[in-house]
Length: 398
Image 1 (cartoon, rainbow, N blue to C red):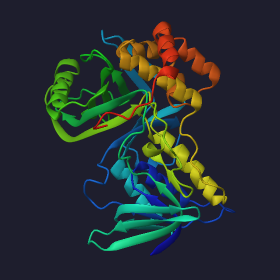
Image 2 (cartoon, helix red, strand yellow; image 1 turned 180 degrees about the horizontal axis):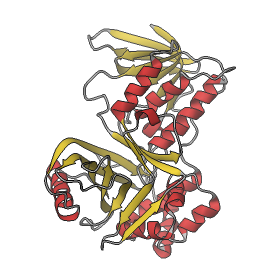
Image 3 (cartoon, one colour; image 1 turned 90 degrees about the vertical axis):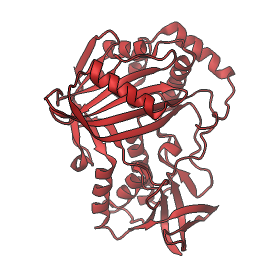
Image 4 (tube, one colour; image 1 turned 45 degrees about the horizontal axis):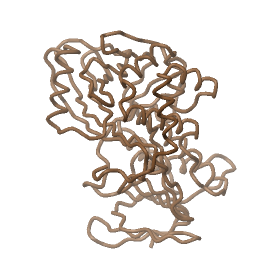
């Protein structure tokens, strides 16, 4: 049996971010031994994906970035173009494979973190620690005894909620025959695509050169589409809207992100914590997760280095969660036109301020200044009915 102060289950963004920060011990801080339990190649290992986030200036993962931008653009359904510089923020694109390589290089120079490839079968938790029982790829049982366990694995089922939508998407990494992209500007939301009767849909373009970009079709709704439907929407978007001409698809990316007002349990037992999306890091109104994961990882690592109780803090403020719950309800009931809702926000609020609002970093006055630019009556009606709605388990498949 391996022994460590900390066991981290899952090597996605949350697990890797936590062990990376644990390995960085400031002068005067105590060292923390950790075991990272990573699922072997197969269905339990997260697929390669792209994370996007924003932060001011340089950041700890800049060495692994694919690209970064200071200009964002939104297209309204009728073609209205809204573009702005987000300085001092930078919008950053990070591929999961590049992030994992950066973390692996840094961990190779640290004796405090051990990486174990195994499938977790159960966690036996007590008041003074937990035993993680797993199985190696060759079938051998392995076990880890840890004072604290941080579980970043996806939940088998989402918690009960009043509203649960899905943000689901498919993306093409494309290379075009002619130079059609603007490398300095991201198309954050392009509503020049057919809109569903409830929720919303938009295109998303992350250019990495004049000929290269990640082009995605994204929808907020209560059910995912078939692969053929995503492909049809992407063909329509790239041909009819973007007019890319001849291009090749060099890679694809697919994802489903729950957008829910569920309450996520961060401490299911005295010695076990949930982190990442399983611990509520996903912002309900946008699906962005990476920045909240970094806040959680930093707070947990700081607590462990200082020998304090390492309960992960809430990923988002109570005020942010309350505002998101209202927005989700308004979208789910069809009371607001989702595309018009976001177009109006980006047209009336400077993008830098709006990004801080979407990340939960705005002050109360700034939150209110954004709130008054939303459709007031539908939002008030949604807010008024929320206290009377029962929280129900999500439908099968969510």
